[in-house]
Length: 573
Image (tube, rainbow, N blue to C red; front, side, top):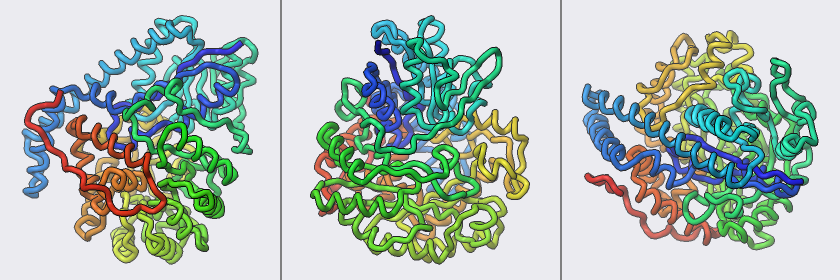
């Protein structure tokens, strides 16, 4: 007997282009269920049309007005006046109302679909912010309306907060921590009455009033995983140009490094597991023929350089035309890997630099890489012709004026093509969380965990409109920390260093016709997503997807110059 299920990804308003990329996690789960003989449909609400519904025409007009006023203040070098502050506050309130209405509509749609399909269970991928609270609201409506359906949840938010999710809400029959490709099939067997929850690996559930967490079981041989499913019959959001068709390839999992701040080893384990290069190529070719795209991004946070080189060699040997990006790691040696990756179609690499101060790297980050090694890696990546992104955490725990200057000088010397400045966040289960006193961190563990689990970031709002988190770093509160990160980012921009362009955004810029004009593309996308310029975004998504269908290993000549963003006086329909 097979089950019927619906897998849901609701992350709130899609505020960046990478919010519109396909969800490889749900595609993996769908592939596992199908392989086991079950029926499944994926409902992914990270789409262009969903964005249009989240920001209706009247709100777009309001957002444009606020945006113009704010830009005027920035250009004049003045702080926001009372009218701008009031405009942001009113817009923030209206966005919350629009989000609540959209959740209600989604819940009604899913309740009807559960009834029409005779679905046995619904699985949610939990995100932070609105993706967490919104998913709970939708799940509550489903449970109230469809009495017999089971509701489960998984995803990165569960990996981070584990049992705390079950303490925050009782709406889920079980949540899943870690990898779920095998677990989702075992949950289907539980729904069928063939297995108890106690026998479902990675499941967290309630039993006799207590929360039970089963043993965490990681998949050791990733080659055994079924192929992910992006077929439009199963994954309807993949039809047309509703999503940006840059597909994430799950080439490796786990991280052997022990950075004090990083959640990756917590999520995926410290043992590095990788697929065979031939299996990765097989997935690439399946996506090229099935989805019709040649654009990819590797999922692994520590892709083994030997694997990356082997994949690149196979791409060249088989003459597959693709364009892709990946994480890099400065602690690895290179050989001729960067050159081979570039020739095979790699466009950009993302490196976690974290700091330009040796002291901060060692005391605050637990990084094994040295500054000389990082500088050498960045130089070789740039020499190979790859768009090279460096990420830093600022202000870091134990940061001083001297370490800031060291980081600034280091970045000016190595000159990555882009620097992503991230303010520090304390994730449960990391060294920062377990030993805060070593790093100048101060918070009450239970209070902070509850606040962080339900925290709603406001990417469309200036940092001064974000709520505070109850922790301090270097005796600075969260609001001050965010402001310092913004200040340092501006300092880098004034020094001629591009910021806030990630590896995937660099690939999108190229596919959209903005190669060499990544700063312009970044600024246009910020304005478009803030103002809800749905037509402009639709056109760019279609352009990216069209170029992705024809992507070549050699970037060739730039595409035809793409247009800027007209901020219309009248809202588009």
